[in-house]
Length: 373
Image (tube, rainbow, N blue to C red; front, side):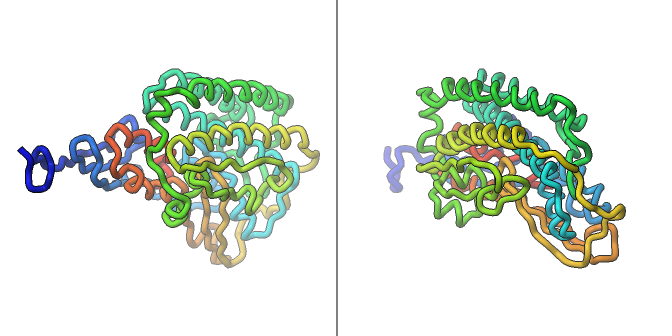
């Protein structure tokens, strides 16, 4: 019997909670889904379960102690968090970082990008049902964590930078090991492609799913791979170079369709471009000091500044205010890419099936430690 609305059956919409404890939300994220059968009618994203007050904590720590707090935001890309913060303080204090330190920072940032993308690829593929890729990607990520451990003694939260440069120079033979890793990684990216790029099931699960146009992406405030997947060639490393990126040759991959598949292809090409940058940074590594002229007591002059870098997930920016008197920041704010990119989720999943929700959360690549802070 057909109802007056034209539906075959008179059904009610179902409201379900996905999360906050769900294996595919990549952290404690709650998505309230309103469903018509298996199709998402609307959704509401609920955050705040991992809030630790990092910004307020930073206002009660001195400028050096804050570095290790930044590790705890995007905890799978701690090194880029460190670089972004240190460069913001250096900008406020007008400290010149030695060229050798800038080159090492560039190499570490790109190693971190590969490690972050490995975790993204492994978990994203596993969400959709591809188990093998998870094991492959984590195998390569372990090699990077070994390099980080040799450099700074840590594998997750590195505390790897200092205001004005680096805490220590690279160990003997570390540069050779990095180049060996680049050779290995170049071959492994081809393996990832062989498993997924032309896989019929992968194509069915990602092509045409979660399409977002360039205009919509810009309006929402997306950055990083989700923005570039929609065809916008915005990359801070090219547009506003920092560290030694102005001396590196690399391309910015962009998509054409703005769907989940394009966001996957963009990150896959970023693997190759990161390897290219690392080789240039290590092979052209200059001699010299690793720390600039920094006062023993760091007390920036009164003023405020904002500085952003290209983290693996997008634009991470720091806004800091100094009163010129205290050894702590007067104001400390972070513009995290995961928080801004997560705004797109309700728009992306509307009209898709429940099974596509996990694919779309994965395609944004959020870390909830950075969203909630």
